[in-house]
Length: 532
Image 1 (cartoon, one colour):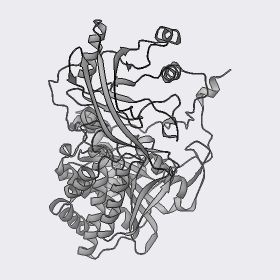
Image 2 (cartoon, helix red, strand yellow):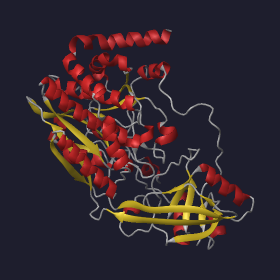
Image 3 (cartoon, helix red, strand yellow):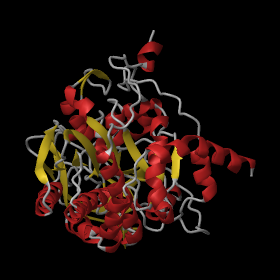
Image 4 (spheres, helix red, strand yellow):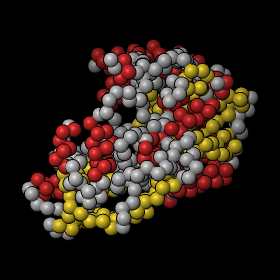
């Protein structure tokens, strides 16, 4: 009870002035609700972006097709300046054309597995023994020298699987939202250069050894997932990033469902020989090595040289269709653009600032698309870092960037990213949507997605708090990331609230408050400091 009182007092302190000063246009909100909740097109957009044009792996032909569709749809809705912007070089892309895997002995059964992205093809259907490579340090590898060629190599140990007694999907409890609201100002993190400067790690030594031995394929299982859910991403090579370089051979690699991997492991531990077969056909794509973000605008009036940006990453991994990661965010942001176009037609109210939608690519490989955009438009960076050394004129023209990338769950509030000056503004804008259960503001940072590219260059960049659902438990980077796991009501709610935030940001007299930014700060490199 005392903690609840503390929260209430804090809210009063920061929010009451905001209600008196921050304008909320009810006419616009009514029109936005009508389009977002009653006349929603979000599931139709999802059907095209996800079912028809998924998965959307960066560098793949399907991403190119999805991009062409999105551009056409945005133009059909009447958005202006619809175009793609190149970034890169990214390197070669990858496409899966065929895959099957079977256990042939001690008896036949189909193996549930997915190849890792950028794996090379096998030479048609290949067959061989399975072997577990048990090595924790370099000297352990001697026992396997000359024994891996023509084999399927298991790298992981057995993982215990526990039965579910509660459903994996959840919404935030009020106590959890209270903890977020009471979170203190986050501690600034030093900028770091994570390039390796020390000696070879055992992991690098291991992959050098594997590459020399030339096994048929490398098999593993992910650290989570069961009941047929397989979490899989990119393949490994001896050097980080090499898998996208032209001419580099990537050993075929696959991630198995934990139940099937455990069965193979147990058989080998009992001394029972296991024979597997695999037929993997892949194709390297993207010959020019460049990739593209999708950009579209709704022109402003009066303050049209200033911009409000909103977006999500359009790319995905390859084992599902990229529904919750991040088809959900992309289709919501496309729906925001559609809603605002309809609201402008209905009300005759033109946004004062230009509204700019961005659908990013390369997010899964490290926010590459949005960072490329930031480098082109907002800041000069030190070589091989994301540490801004100087700012470009465009940086001063962007009022805010809003991002959505945490699955299908409804919006519950906003991560303020350590910017307390926006609290009163956001609280006023959330108040009309309290019936939609969105009202939590937290000073906390949240990471892992494209708003960070804006925050890094001093532009107010925000990610929305979303109900977790079963995002990390079931769909994030898994074969279950399909349209069936989208929640229509949540996507409608998210699109409605974000449309209001974008429009109200565009209509303010002032731009959104900014945090200070250290330009030209040197990155801390702990590894180099630790060297003698």
